[in-house]
Image 1 (cartoon, rainbow over the protein chains, first blue to last red):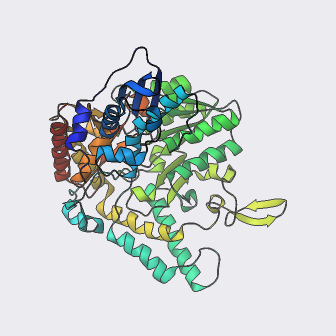
Image 2 (image 1 turned 90 degrees about the vertical axis):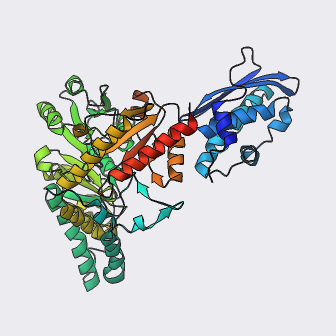
Length: 129
Length: 409
């Protein structure tokens, strides 16, 4: 299937929540050296909720569109709900079937987001594939 | 010199009967691996159907015939590059060939104070083995830089080489920039210091005539699968005088003459460097790949590459946001061209081209230091071979123009 849908191209060309938060509560950067995809997540938290979320990044359409869609969805969400998100969730919100090699691109923003949250929660995120 | 009849040649390659997503295959990834003519596939099948037996070991007929076929290929390879059969070693791939030289030279000739000179444009297979030598034995490694045209800064060889330089390892033809390097010029520098020269011929031997006596290299590594042959066959050429003095790389059966528990006599060349059961079936079939190339004539292979790369560069100039890497002079480059559409990631370009049946490669092409040097994350690469024609370039360009419109950055 053509993964370059209107939804994905829209989020790539017009990323939502793009930018940094100057006085952030937590931050994480994830980078894939094989292809050069990069996503930085900035979080502002209110108790156990994500009050504000922004991202910076560069790379392929899938990684950047995924970041844009993810940040839109996670605004105002509870931290404990976000850390449970997984690959199936990402594929659902992207609404496309991805080859295994593109799934990695799609999951990059989620990985960064989880690491940012765990940093705040003081735990160590196990680096899972 | 006749022009290649590509339409006729294509009929010899069964894979082009296939369709990808309903479209005809436009295969522009021969630098990664080449397609195979029917005769090579048929001869591999025939080997297993009629001749299959382990080589060199037994007295019986099958083994004798299998050994003949195996050694015949060795003779053909030797003739192809103007070497002697005992100077041709069969390995798994080109990478293994380079690793053999690295390890064997380290065991035999290198001392801690020695250094190796290589270049920033090398494939990882001609970088990582030297890095390992540095890590394991403390041997220093220097990297010759490129200029903004993607040509080597030959002055760097003078800068880095000295009496302690035991080896210069460089590619004949870059798998990313397409740059064809002037081996003769580097050889002249190496002679001043008595350094050996190892050439990575992975992209050169399949694409133009390489005569080891003419370029006078001490080692040449290349692989069968990039020149119409099967996978699993790498070739190392080494000058007899050095191979004779070098310690073996891998140890096992075949490479020994006599084994006692505390004393082993190595086998003669080339077997000293061929431990264990060789990939005899694929080696036997490889002979027919060489014969096919000889029939087509290497001058014609080169001319076809030149035509296509020249045409491709011309058509690429129509696309505003397209950046080409490497020399723009088609005479200075081999039949491949790496590029980027500015603002669009290489993976996205190759994904969308795939919807039209066009196969290019995208990523870092096992040249991460080179990409870092060029300040890019990744690149697209289109590579040509004897079954490509101008229409393939046209389809590629059409596809790229479509992608630009779709993304409208």
